[in-house]
Length: 147
Image (cartoon, rainbow, N blue to C red):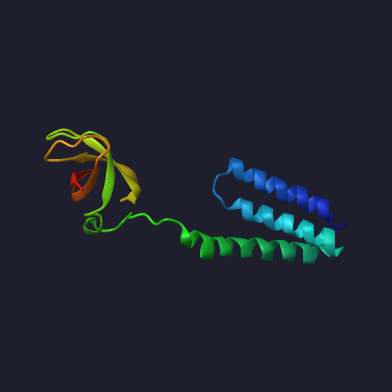
């Protein structure tokens, strides 16, 4: 007995829904591959079991490769693992006021060294909502001045 088109459709939808329980963003491609096999069987007719499984494997792996090669490349890059010299000069928005010898919070448009929000220090008082520039990294804090 070879699987019908609706068997592949149910399996594909099940794998796509399984992605909700396993948030790895990997299972979805195998589910979409099964849905594609279902569509091929629906429109093209009968295929042997070997051809169906081969088509599923090829389409699933092609979608995984396409994801990592084309679409994943265009995502925003973070500055994780970069030298702190590349972070100096970054502009952020102060979300928590900062005063001399007191901590504030600064948020960056893209993640800086793995986080989009950092505790900051400043030599002068700066109110929340001001744009600030990173001048140094001191441990787990960033030192900022008005931009």
